[in-house]
Length: 62
Image (cartoon, rainbow, N blue to C red; front, side, top):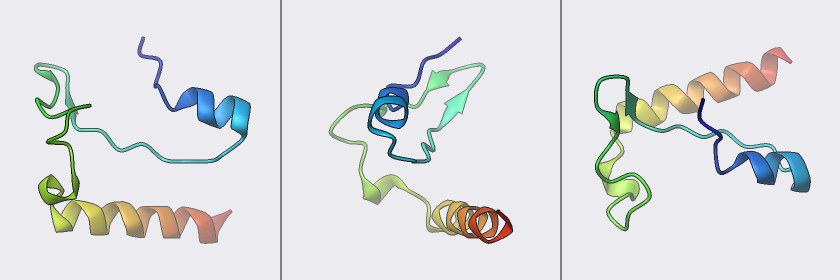
């Protein structure tokens, strides 16, 4: 089991958030995870769009 480091912000500060992390059962987290190279330049625009559309859909459905 993995305890997300953002869980504390959700639980104690009551700040809702979504955490999208590249993870593979075979390889684990991506090499840039929690490093300076983890920045907006490595996010595929199609992935960002899909996540945005999913979040908007969820917000408007609830």
